[in-house]
Structures are given as C-alpha cells and as structure tokens.
Image (cartoon, rainbow, N blue to C red; front, side):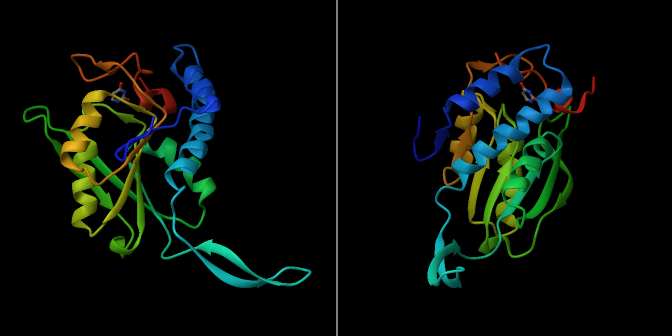
Length: 211
Ligand code: URA
C-alpha cells in the first residue's frame, strides 16, 4: 500500500522475515540478523527516489556518462536505542552515509519525551535524512525526534520503521505531514501500555537480549 505519506513494503521476503521476528521463541541472534536483512529491503524502498546526476567514467572498453548519486551524503539518524538495529543494516547498504543519534526518554509524570542525547552531522539542510526506529507506536518520540532534526535544519526527511500502529501514523501525519513513512507492516492498534498489537514485543529487548 502506498500513499504520499505512507509506504508499506509488502514484499514477500519482508513479510516472511517479519513473521519470523514476531514469533515469541525466535532467539536474539536470529532476531538481530532478520532485522538487518529487512533493513536492506526497507532501505531500498526509502531511497528509491534519491536524485541522480551523471559523471564521465572510463570502463575497460570505452568512456561513458554514468549515473551517480547527486548532492551531499545522506544522514542516517538512529532513534535510540532500538533504532541501532535498523541502522546497522542501512549503513551496510549506504556505507558513505553520515550518522547521527537521538536519545529520548519518556518523563513518567508528564509522559512527554525528554532529550538525553543528540548528535547529528553538519549541513543537515543539504542532506536527505533517514530517521530509523523499528516501532512507530504512539508516535510521540518519533514526532519529537523529527522536531529536533528540523531544528537542526533538516528539510528532506524520511522515517523508516519495521512496524507501525495506526495511532503512530496519525500522530506523525498530524505533526509532520511532510515526512513520508516507510514500514514493513501496519498492525491493529496499541494496547493500554503503548505496545503494538499483535506486534513483536519490545524491539530493543528482543534485539539486545535484555529483560
Ligand atoms: N516499542 C516497542 O519496542 N514495542 C512496542 O510494541 C511499542 C513500542
């Protein structure tokens, strides 16, 4: 399914791998490897409209004008900590990308996201920015992370996740209608403590073997 704001990558390999990740008994190492594999396929989709230019090169046989990526290197932004699992795979595909990190936690009293870490590449306004976080749940921390990236000058931002809840998509659309979302699936809903249902549990715990 594709709208200007949302692309669901319903490729059979993505869907198969996602099912394995959802299963309760999938071991940590396998979960991590699957996330890495899926991130390649999601990154393929999120970068499909990158602008190209051409340059003249010499093949062993003759000179040719060949396509090459245009503009400054991409900025990949991991929303900590679960974003790092997606980040690894995207970095494999785009090794020259610049990388940044946004750390937010939820204040237990106000329930609002609070920043504890922020480091992004320079010249954000001249780069395609891809923010990654596997789970788009309430959308509050994702929207807050995008606010910070925009304050750093980012104008061309994409959000890449593995699973999205309808509530999170709505929140992002309201806060950042200019930021397209690419996801492997849209699940049914959030439960009363903010987990995606049916989901896959806590993505950070599953990828790092915590809890
Ligand atoms: N974060 C997770 O890791 N899992 C959810 O289901 C929701 C938010």
